[in-house]
Image 1 (cartoon, rainbow, N blue to C red):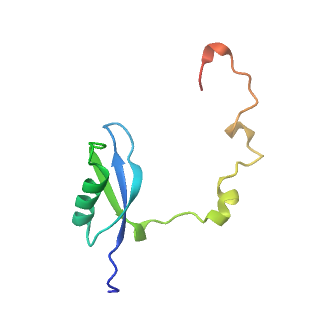
Image 2 (image 1 turned 180 degrees about the vertical axis):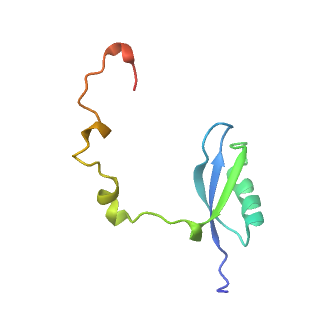
Length: 94
């Protein structure tokens, strides 16, 4: 073992029915300590009712250098981003 304390990513659900959101990272030796530390750091003012901690090493992220390749919409499928329709006022916010 290298002696480094592992990094954990912290996700909190603010209320039932909402999705967990990433709120930050924390160093801890195991999952129990990570949960306790996350609770102490990120929910001091009652911000959530559920906490997830995930080892940062277990997360695979996309390469920022490939952002255009991964996330730019294709010009061949214009129906995915239909910005060319006129929306009547009665519809409201879409």
